[in-house]
Amino acid sequence: MINLETVKALRALRLPGLANELESQLEQPQRYRDLKFEDRLAMLVDAEQINRRINTVKKRMDKSNLTDKQACIEMIEYYEDRHLDKGLITELATCQYIRDHHHVVIRGATGTGKTYIANALGTAACQKLFKVRYVCLSDMLNEYAVAKATNTQNSVKAFYAKQDLLIIDEWLLRPLPEEETFDLHELINACDQKGAIIFCTQYDPDDWYFRIDCDRDDDEDSAVTEAILDRIINNRYNVILESSVSMRKRHGFIAGSEGGRND
Image (tube, rainbow, N blue to C red):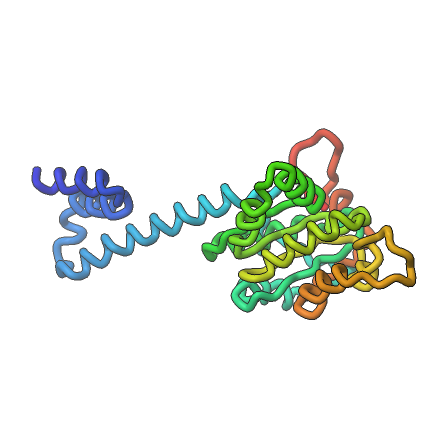
């Protein structure tokens, strides 16, 4: 009776892992009879730690906004024509680049699987308890523009800045005018202070200079563009996808069907 009350008390204290393990021990006394008290206590503590980790990973995934929460490193496909560096992907899966505040540029044509790889790296980061956020560049800039109109842009910057890993998809899919360039500078400057950023793009970094602050003349320099690129170009890993066959085609994607790989 006392033990059952203890189980209830543990649940009331929001220690479900510990409560479940104690309940298991009570239901199978013969299994644990020969264990020392310290060993049984260690098992209770381990169960609670495991339960908390599982819940934290779930929360990280729920808040990540990843477009494919089933994506994982183990399912990335290394077809010969993709020229995908498996060693580099394996290294990135450790998430050391996040701890070191390095960025990742995933470049490839439409359909080569950039977004899937970014989602897989995002999942790996969530599993290591990092805070992850996926966003398309256009949505990020629109959100910031609306925030400026209501004088809440600092809250938006703070939100993105607290992420350990920010995944920006459709990076420079369209050229950015001057106003959006200054907005982008503020956002990148905020995000660069803490963790890492993954950029999914169709364009080589050498082409980025004239896709940012695009209204200027070809012979005109852009200090704000240089400031943005300086934070990225010299502090990045390159993941290059060269496949001429769309991953959607490889997987037999049919419009309107469920599943299929994202770009």
